[in-house]
Image 1: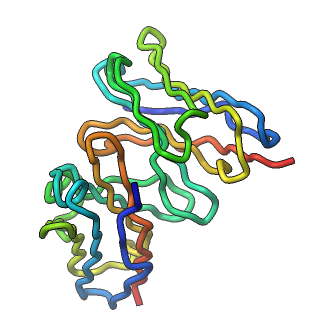
Image 2 (image 1 turned 60 degrees about the horizontal axis):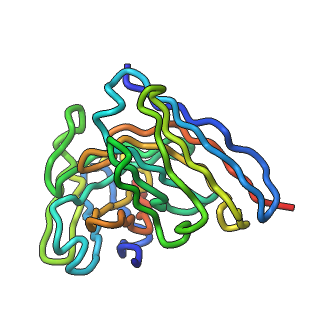
Length: 109
Length: 116
């Protein structure tokens, strides 16, 4: 089972939008609806921001949105804020394994 | 308040063993699947193991299969991870996390260092 593929880093200015891709294969991202995204600030535990591909837990701003196309899931952060600077991880359940992406560092310029 | 509190980490020599615990509170522990996820220093998240609510099903990542064993005691609201034949590459912060279709709740983690 290989890790899901994410870009190492993305950046944007305050107010802009950034999109993070997460590429797997048909047996994980492409075959299951259990794709989730986590935000992790330095020294803190991860926090879920998107689950089941597109759903947002209560308390997560609607600036965060998720989507899926084939074997690639995406997280979009709209209206970028300084507090969005963090590491972001995608996650997929295959039925027998859980896979994480390698993580993407989002920098707010 | 829903809470997960890991314990049992520490320094261990290569080839040694360690047992981690995760005490759950604020929810009906026996209703949820539970997982261990680890993060090596400066690295990303890696799934380690999962156990079903009734402990009838256990799953393991390829890097720990045959060396680690997950278990739970629903009467004590506690999750465990028995780690044997530890290697330097097992050095990480180990989180326990509650799973539905995603990781809803995370603990703060317990640090395991494998070194001579």
